[in-house]
Image (tube, rainbow, N blue to C red; front, side, top):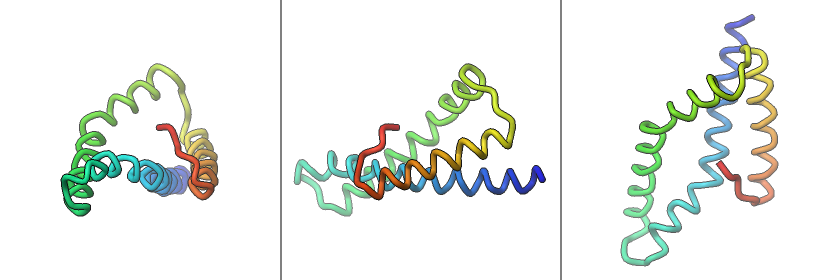
Length: 101
């Protein structure tokens, strides 16, 4: 049972990351491309590199803060939270409302 919960949590986490990426990538690339000094493809590459570096360098601090200082959840609680957030994020992105992350 715990293997199934782990698999569901991974899938929901990836789906949630995709939802947040869809919501925020436009504003990220808009800053780079909005100056009209560089081509769209170059702006997309720079924005992607910046996003990947931010994820790689800072995400562990967020996970540590949430898991150690704010809440304590078992695997079933984590899956429930991920499913709820993924549903809310899908609705918000579908309506075109920006997500604050």
